[in-house]
Image (cartoon, rainbow, N blue to C red; front, side, top):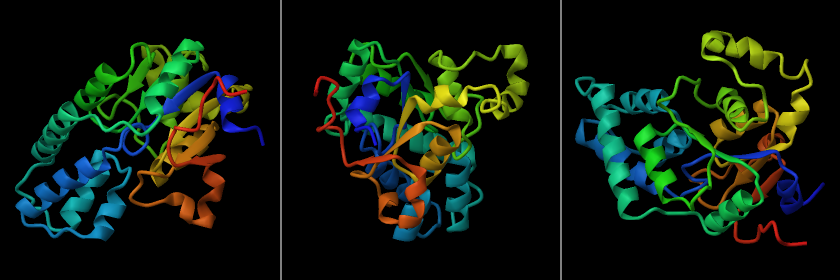
Length: 252
């Protein structure tokens, strides 16, 4: 198999998950999720922390309620509280994964577009974009955007459209996006997606990335649950790394 640096040099675009992949923010989310749950009648456990890794907000709230979160606390209020707390922590200290800023800079200099693709709320995303090296990202998709959440491949296919890898879908055709995506392989766009590289860390994210048809890199160094430890999940990714320190486009 081609080494990862070589694959990146020839990539049409690179798509990045956020939490646990671009930044080591999962500890921030664990702290605030636990605070909300235990502050409103629930019981925290490590098993719950593992189940929450990479989950969308609808899934997060369902799991918190299943573990005793007071139903009188609305999902909207709980999500707003968690978002505000994590945003404050990230504004105080952005926990970049080792080597990622340098790789983002190299990709931008090489003219390879990057898109941030996450289920985190737009304020979280915009703060990360503001702290990233200048020109790192050409676009972003947040959990507030009208796109299905991971493990659906829709966020990554939408990213491919934003990066110009796949044809854009007009706003009037948005309702037909699923049908358009279903035809990707049939019309030959599967080859284009395969030339995109996705960095992910969680089971929902890796599932979405693989279903999107891209080349997938599992980032394991920050994960609460290391999917790379499970041989049954080996088919979800093509490469595995702990962090980005050994990946340089200039290495020949």
